Amino acid sequence: MLYSVIKAIHIIFMVSYFAGIFYLVRLFVYYKDTDDFDEVKQEILRNQYIFMAVRLWNIITLPAGILMLLSGLTMILLNSGLMKTPWFHLKLTFLVGLGIYHFWCWKKVKELKKLNGNILPTSNIKLRQFNEIATFILFAVVFTVILKYYVLEYWWQLILGFFGIIFLITSIVKLVNRNKTKELKEKNQ
Image (cartoon, rainbow, N blue to C red; front, side):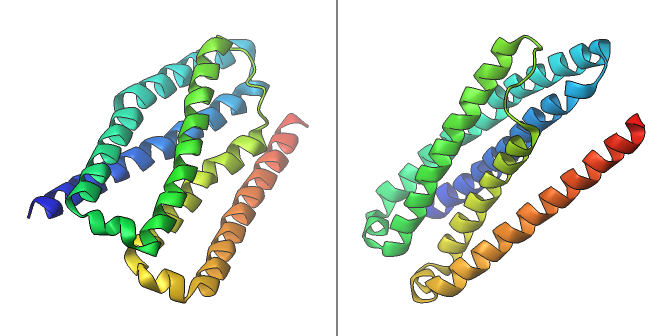
């Protein structure tokens, strides 16, 4: 029973953490989108986006991440057999990637605070692409946890499907960006 309660807590804070990470990087994109705005509008929006990013990081994303990590470690302590399963090692590998992504997000929040409303040097398309990394990690972790041993048995089909999903998502992002750029050009003419 205790393990199931901890697992439920882990899932709840995993959902909260990913919601925070997803929205945080969108705020970076929105901040970058203000580059072409007039000075007054730019200042107002950038200050608001900085405020929102810092609050989101400190109030939702970081605490949810810590509670997700603690509940995950507790599950490992309660079921040490997990460490002997190959699918769990794969999950941990993806979580290392999530840790690197988390660190990148933290550095971007700090960078945004230091900018004081100046231009974010990262390109818009790069921010939009980074926004999808959390989605790919989430897909990889969830499929690994749900399919467990089938991940190892059907690894090549899953990799093919995973790259198909990556291709689909990146194509949609590029299409949206192309349409957005086209609309901005038409608006400026």
